[in-house]
Amino acid sequence: MVKKIDRKAGSLSYNRLDMQISQVLHLAIELYDSLDYLFVLDFYDDIALFDNDNNNGVVSYYQMKTSENTITLNTVLSEGWIDKLHAHLSEPDVFVKELGLITNCHIQMDKETVSAEKTSFLSVNSNSVDKIKNDIATKKGIPVEDVDLSKFVHMKTTLSIDRHRDIVEHETSDFLYERFPEIKLQTVKTIFSSIMSLLNKKQSYEKLSYDADFIEVKNKKGFSKNVFDRIIDWSIKIRIPEFPQIKEFARIQDIDEASAALAFTQILADNNANPEIYIRTFKDLEKIISDNQPDQDESVWHYACRCRKVFGQVSNDNFLYHDTLYIEVLVICILISRGR
Image (cartoon, rainbow, N blue to C red; front, side, top):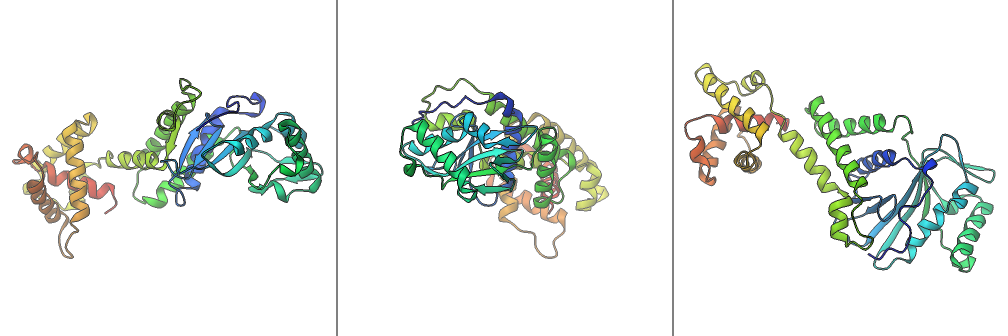
């Protein structure tokens, strides 16, 4: 993708980089069920949103600006926020879906206050539309009638300067509890902190060249739905329940309790160290559980034992566990973590 505009310019008084990170997570949650998205942070623009993480050419660009007070149209125009967004329309090899100005506050356009969650620029009063078109035409040296505002929107974020992190953490919590009702609070906190740390790392990376190719930009500055899913997936996987919960859930008999407890101790150690064989075993068992549903009257323990037999048939690592209850107990851990 050829880039011809200044990606870094902007008024520091209206731009909070840490709030941009919160806004990306806010959008990632909001769009989770509708797009296989890829966000690129602080490179093509403050936020670039691709409809597909393999770059199908459909992209939206956003400038994010913050203020303790209302932002006026005169400020928007004098700071050049709109014409910077407009420049994306001339970029080759992309279809621009939306050009958005995101603020935490109202926009005062002449005598009209724009404060809705999303407002098309073409829906505001005609005087403001004319001002915007004339400003772009003058700066770009093009006829006013050639200025197209049909893709421009103002978005008023629900995040605030002081509490944006708290707000998006609450949104993340609601999002996760809705999908995983059995998820633990500590797992929720782990997922949130992992995502925020990753987004901060992506945003702050500054070693990309101006003409870096898309794959490199994606790897260094991108956050996709697939990455979001992997963080959630693995954070849930590594949540090993307490042994009393395992014993009660599977109704482990006294005759097996000591061996199961010993296996549980080893699982805890492996979960902390994450050796390759543990990860491989975990993935093999997840597939076995997915491919082999429990029978109607089958107990949890008998089901775990049946999964163990399948594991012995398909895994080259079975010899490591032949005299322990490691596999059975790990199956139970996975079932509990998945709310099964």
